[in-house]
Image 1 (cartoon, helix red, strand yellow):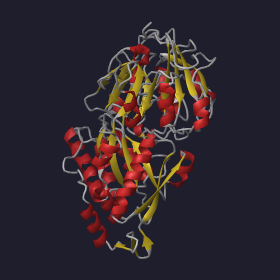
Image 2 (cartoon, rainbow, N blue to C red; image 1 turned 180 degrees about the vertical axis):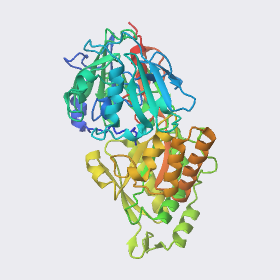
Image 3 (spheres, rainbow, N blue to C red; image 1 turned 90 degrees about the vertical axis):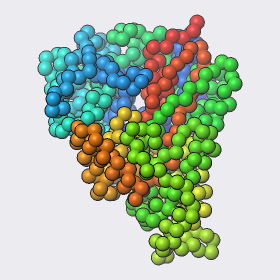
Image 4 (cartoon, one colour; image 1 turned 60 degrees about the vertical axis):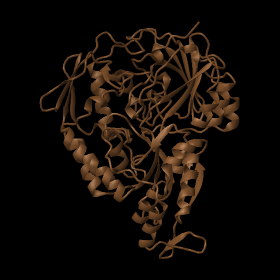
Amino acid sequence: MTARSIRGAVAATLATVLSLTAAACSQPGGSDGSNSGSGAGDSAVVAIAYEPDSLSPLLGYGKDGNSKIFDGLLALDGNMKLRPALATALPEVSGDQLTYTYKLRRGVKFSDGKPFGAKDVVFTYRTILDEKTNNASRTELDAVKSVAATGDDTVVFTLKYPYAPFAQRTVLPIAPEHVAGKQDVNTGAFTTHPIGTGPYLLTKWSKGEKLSFKANPDYWGGAPKVKKFTMAIIKDDDVRATRLRSGELDGAILPPNLAKGFARDSGTRTYAATTYDYRTVTLPTHNKVAGDTAIRRALDVAVDRQAMVDSVLNGEGRAAYGPVPTDSEWFTKGTERTHDLAAAKKILDDAGWKPGKDGIRAKDGVRAAFPLWYLTGDKLRQDHALAYASDAKKAGVDITTEAGTWEVIEPRMKQEAVLAGGGSPADPDFDQYTLLKSSLAGDGFNNMAWYDNKAVDQALEAGRRSGDKPERKAAYDTVQRELVKDPGYTFLTHIDHLYVVKDRFGALTTQVEPHDHGLASGPWWNVENWTPKK
């Protein structure tokens, strides 16, 4: 994560876990504007796995785009190309790549009827950059030196250094100064009762149960045809599948083994979205075993990634050797790690980790053992964790898998391993910086492993600050090669996201997705453009 990450991204949109009983009994619909059970006609009810901590973009909500409540200056289309949103065009960029000028769309109103203008853009970015604001993604805007309005319809960003992917950062949602500016940014009502310019208005947020929306009839892009939209928050994979099959839902994100069960259903369609979403094991620097370089290197080659892709993901994914997928132009060829149990054992032998009578290794009185936590109800993480522990034991490392909520896991992250997720498309800075930068260790879900590598730190800064693509490529090559020498994480797989949706909405599309799936991604990334069949 993650990064949004863990992302995601992840940002960190963390889950409030539902019990099986509550999930099975609770209906996604209700008197707040959504039907009981699945949607009908101009309504839709979909199930997601995670719930945001906040709905305020000032605190990180929707930072990668696709917020249903808000718009950014720019947005990403189905091919992940930037397009204008609240801006009328892509930004004008100065020759030195230090100034970005955006012309704003006129006549746009917030859902309370107040006009949108340049002052709202300036307010949003300045507030996020304020250290008093609890936004874990602030470092993503580190390049911004200043943001200023020129009249009501022009905004100028001045950067400290040429930050190549800056325009991609301006998909983050814009908040209304006249509302959010009059409240405590971290605790005010705006965090749960947002007002934006987007295609939908939040009608109710039932914590741990659902987010209910209705179409914005005055949306500048045209009123959506799906008039009522509900996101049911169902953490447990099995419960989502059961409720989709029972007819309570119109769509859901499902792991491969459960999505496969719908393949022959005549009334549904399955969509596979290519992603940057990885599963990884954090190897905390402060753990005597997991922080040992030999243990890390041995686990990196002891793990059978392809077996995980085949068995855990049913082929719906790829082996992962770092945050960058192997089919990305930014992936460093030659950094793939082949499954080699004999090599893993030799690394441990040479480092003084000797097998005991039970086959588990020890060194200087320290047993090669540590716990590995995964999120309760997440079968993909559970299966990854169990497979990893099995591979590790063959090399003489005893890993005990434990399930828990994030409230249980987070305080343990400094000392204990976590089956984590993360990943963000578009630019390698987006997830590598927050995942690996030593100064971000302990900053929420950033750098969960407390990874500390000076060569990586220097390369991350070089990649971020250079406007020259070959120089940036060289920097990220350095990062990936260092992860071979000192892997503070064991990257396992990049997973494809599978969604099952009733076919009454016709043929839908997906984008290349980040780790933060379901809430802003999935076939409903553009639900405002859906046309339900009558």
